[in-house]
Length: 407
Image (cartoon, rainbow, N blue to C red; front, side):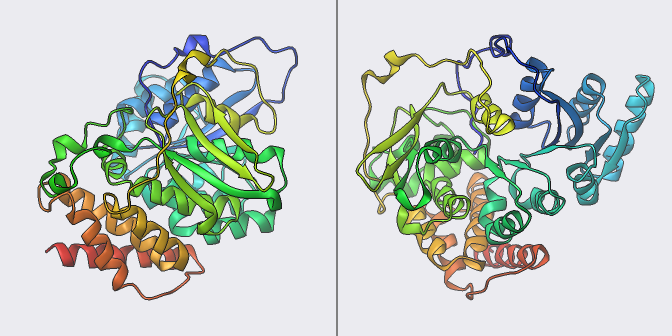
């Protein structure tokens, strides 16, 4: 989950002196013009002895893609369409930039993720649009830093099986799962009792439940802690975002849904916790800057020195609360989908995306989001797709079902 923190340290403050010369790691960055992509490039800028850019998948932002290509001179850049690729190629010629192969579409993104020169893939394309490229990278034996929870929700069973078969590391960049990964380094998997994912509670944690039906998009987009994209902000308000993270945690860490719990933590200081069978609970705490989990994933198993330090004075007050399932039915629906797995997880994500867009356009009320999801899940047969093509087909079918309900 990407979150754009407020008051984050500047890029010039990130790098700290290193007393060794690590091997250069060449990155394929999928979603390079988004916030995670740009934060990753800021790390490349601050650690030039560690990282360089092999390829970029830049979507629709030609201006930013051109700037990045001129600055980083990757071997390949992919745009969303042939027209946009042509625009970028023309601009690069005008700028006198040569040696950059401009490609487009899903095939172009896959080409970027499987480029022979790439040593590590950062998967940060929003939604299932980056699924094929992420899967292709794993099949090609590329270590992946995953900042796209939808990939793991929709096709986690396939992705994790492919990663295990090829012994390819999939390292979470989402702050919560990155925190869990760090906490689980100190104990054996069998010693883990509970994974605790923290949630801010969003803007309606204490809002009167009887007023939920009349919540407006403007209200829902005012998150008290984070500045994020529109869909993820609404998902935070319904807590569906945390539900997707439950499914992602089950897949990443190979645990059942009952072993993943959510605690509402309004301060957003503790990113996640892991409770062990002996009663010990480990918490991961760091400055609210996405470069911390990105750098962790890029450098794993090392921990490069940086100056992104945390002020312990911020720990003076910490609250933890149980989530209210009556207030946030999307969280309940996510647990139910997680138990069934397969097509139900795909339908959960797809129906939510359609319902959130309808809410933002004024087509349904706020509580119409969980009602739409529940109806789509009720009509979804139990199935476990075994290929990416089957996953994408199930995703399309769930979206069609959601649109039919809303129509």
